[in-house]
Image 1 (spheres, rainbow, N blue to C red):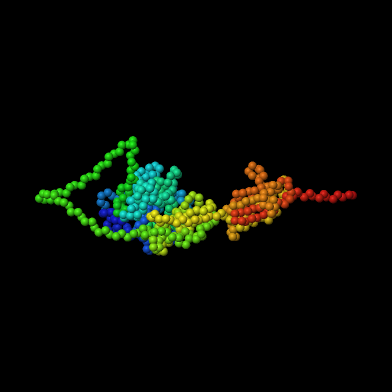
Image 2 (image 1 turned 90 degrees about the vertical axis):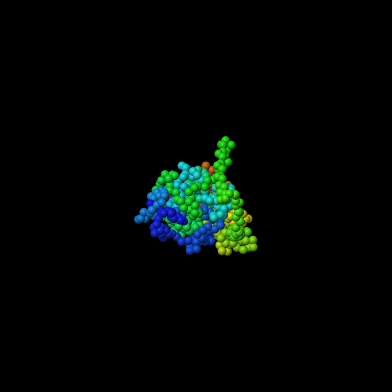
Length: 576
């Protein structure tokens, strides 16, 4: 039989020599620690934070406890066992059918939407194993929703992160503190912005393995990480749960699943036993039960057993227990987050960008005490507010959490403008505190062009009642670069000094064949090119003008000529 390894070894599972060899083999390829850079991304380094701080809202799970069992090793010497034998390697490689299907579908979706991420489904399987034992061995219904809720411990700061309620108990049933929820163990505040609908039922349910797996994949692929790169892979895993031990455990299962796995029926997956909080993880924390409906009789609760009375001392009589005096009250040291009094701007410049471009400035704030002293190691959340914009942070997210540096400064990832123009708000708040945040107004202006030129110098001529042989095509540029997706208007005007629409001369046709002399809502293509529809002429002869204008002020006036065809001169006659 093969033993499991965790924070502690299963009693009697292996000899000391075999255990040492196993840990050495598993550790050989595991990455070093990590540090956090100024953009909230983790990078490899020597001084990793191996335990969470007082508030874990900067990770998917809030740095909640996880299963520490490592995958089995094939050893030449069978290990003695005590009690129930551990699962064999072949059994450990089995993943419940619905859970496996969810991982693969999520990875397929990400390969299409974020191909540069290179997310392997085995990584989702590794995280699912460590977070919930593959949804408690595949304890899900046919739609992929867990039959029994999977909840992490109450994050009340008592041995865990201190995260006050953020969802009113909607996801975790707790209106006082948050708890990690579902098979991928998202905390409610993270699920609120990271949640996905992976099974197309119109809902984003953290208790559904399809939704949770897709959300986990998107979470791991943010910040434009390439998971085929070891440093980016480490950073992504650590962003899920910021612990070196967690990183090493997930990497071990990732390597194990890459060597081969297979499908097993739902509900028959192998359950892990050891957890980072020292519990065995054998029970699932249920959500608080709702009050019974009037039509359903309630079942009386079983009274708690009465503790036995102390035995009388020899010789009769009774004894009065001596109360134990309370121990001394130890002073508590506030966490960095608890010392923050307010946010200050840290030199953020004007936030303006053209549609589709990156903003040149980034939002930067500083956390300070009441006395104005900077506070390091505080999580600051940056949120793009409202649905009037399609701007995002780099990586495609609308929420980013960044840890303040030694100067107390947190700088948001770069903003990228979408196609919607106008103003929007970037709101900054301190995670874990109810403090007045700072709002920054950002503006997106329309794409512009400052130059328009024809792509051909062919004269545009036509006979009365005919059609022009050549279509007008122009190219737009801005500061010498291609101006793509720029709005334009084309109008047949009366004269160079009168830009009103002409009522005679050349014209376009609409879809019904009617005469049109103004075309609005035109847009240059990806190469900055704009090709107008075919032009026609009425019976009026003369020289006419077509004026094309774009957003940004570029203007081009094109000359059109309508003239009767020249009559050929008669050939001279000869007489004999």
